[in-house]
Image (cartoon, rainbow, N blue to C red; front, side, top):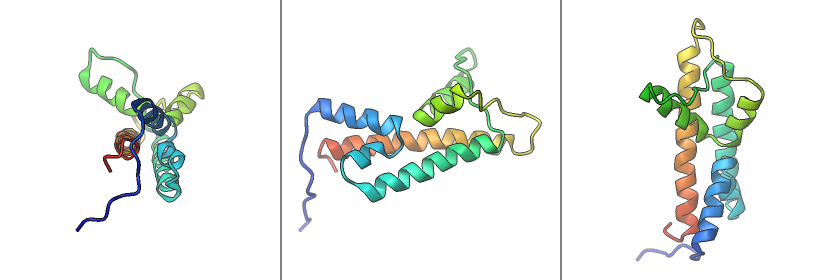
Length: 131
């Protein structure tokens, strides 16, 4: 017999607020719901991945949908939440194509955003009582 989780179903507005918090601050949705360890792990790992991507001369891609892969990379970068906005406001993420680490930096930046998307979905599932 499976033990039931101790989560309760909340309103769709609350699920959206948890999702927004989880997107803006990686792990923020989990922290809000009291899952401190998980939230802190997500916060540390995803922000570290994003910072490493910038340190490795990765590029924050522009929203240029005439080139579909560039547009998708821009959406993946945006999915990182506040770290993206801070880096963009500070003028970071120009990327150095001639740097040996350029592609690694891009991979870290894109992966951080995509992983944060999964964390947001997890937080929304927990808030909705599906997990």
